[in-house]
Structure formats: C-alpha cells, structure tokens
Length: 350
Image 1 (tube, rainbow, N blue to C red):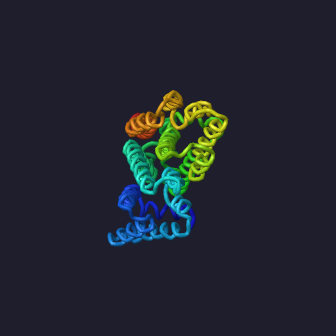
Image 2: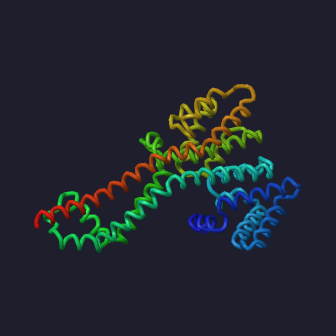
Image 3: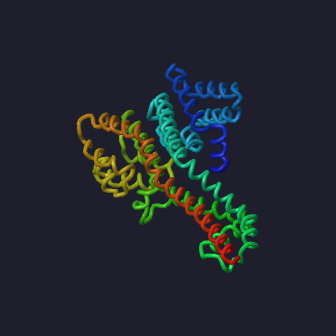
C-alpha cells in the first residue's frame, strides 16, 4: 500500500483524536501488566465493537507486525512523523511510556493544528466566496455592464476586473487545477526544501508554522529519549531521521553533525544556524547544557514553551491571515470600483 493510501486511511479511520484514545488505552493496559501483543488485541477488539472496523484492522496489522518483529517500522508508516519518531525507540523505552509519549505528541499536534486552522478558517472562506462571486460576475454581471458601456471606454482597473472575471468563468477547471498545482508546490517546498534561503523563509508563514510544528515535535521526542535515559548518540539521531520529512531530516542531521564533533545539544543547534527547532529556544538550551540535572530543567522549560505554542502559532498565522484578507479586500474593492466607474461613464455618455 502506498504512502498516499496509508495517509488516506489514517485520516478516515485513525485521526488525531482517535490515535490519542488508542494510545492512552494501550498505555493503560500496559501499565496494568498486559503484554503489548495482548494490549493491541484488546484495542483492536474494542474498536471493532464500537463500529470502527478499519481502525480495528490497522491495530490488528500492528499486532501481526509486532509478532514478526517489525512493529517500529510498521507503526511508523501509519502515523505522522512526530509519532513515528517516538515508535522508533521501541525496544529501548518501556512500551507503556512509549504509548503515553505518543499520546502526548498526538494531543500536542492536535491542539497546534487546530489553532492554525481556526486562525485561517475565515480568510479561506472569504477567499472561496470571492472566487465564486468573481466567477458569477464573469458570466452574468460583466455581460450586463457591457450593454451599458463598451469595454473600450472602461478604466484600466475595470478592464482588468473584466478580464479576470471572464477568464475565470470560462476556465473554472483550469483555475482549480492551477490552485491545486500551486498548493502542491508550496506544500512540497515546505516539507522538502532545505537549500539557500530556507532559513530566511522560515520566519514567515507557512514555513514558520511548519518549523514550529516539526521543531516542537522533535524537542518533545528528544525529551522523551532523555527521560528514558537514552543518549543522543549516532544511533538515536539515526532513528529520529528515519521517520521524518526531508526538511526535518536535514535540520536534525546538521545538529547531529555538530554533536558528533563534541558540541552540546543547544550549541549544536546554534552552530547549525537554521533556527531549528525555534530561535527563542536555542539560547536557553545552550545555557542549560552541562548544568546539573539539565534534562529536568530543559524538560520544565520546554513544557512551558509547548504550553504557549498554541498562542504562538496563532500569532504567526496572523501574518498569513492578514495577507489573505488584504487580497480578498483588494479583489472586492476592484470589483466595486469597476462597477461604479462603468456606471459613471455610462451616465456621462447620456
């Protein structure tokens, strides 16, 4: 099954809220001294009894992978990268702690993504509404205006509005395809582009949002590793990179390279020069490196930072929100200006 199909099934049958529930159920069963195989079997049966047949099949698939000693690889292919990074530590972290950590990561990302979508919902709806109005104007409003005043006498803004509306009405599928291609290119650049200029673009949305989402997940996983006593060595970083996007893999790789030369975690983040996972965190992490009980201090600091992440994400989404609103306002203003200018010209001709 391809990655696309797995993602589709995941969204339908094992969304973020459903994964949190599954992880917490399995963690509770493990803490009650059930073996992981038995916990997965119970979780699958519970999902089936609740009418979630596809979810039950996924959990049963994980159980078979566990019996075949392929649990980390298989589970990692079915969940987002942040949770996959957690499961890469299977066998080195107690399974109950593993699933509890995965639940915390999934819950964190659910809150963060919800904050972003809430911030972006209104301008996206307005943009869709303006697009529909522009399409309708091209087929109904513009032809009526042409009978009132010839297009040759219209102002430049009115002629631009007419050309845009007429083209959109004549090519709705081409416009949809163009939006899809641009969206796909932007999404691909967000998750894969690591070349010159990316560090600068990480300051603005949507790149800044992606950096914060993936950076907070990376930090969360690192903290779980440290809490479990796992050293951040070559093997640990190798496991983390296996489950991530090209962008995150590159950022982790640069931190890993500096740590391999003897630098601490925070110093390596600073030397990498990418501002990953977040520029506001790096000086504090570097200052805590090597202090007594630094893992515990870092954990408390990152927990507070993560607790504020929803507000930070909403703030960073505000720039993109504002840009969309400005674009929508300009299109609406252009349409209104065109209408009044045409009517004024028609009145003057009379």
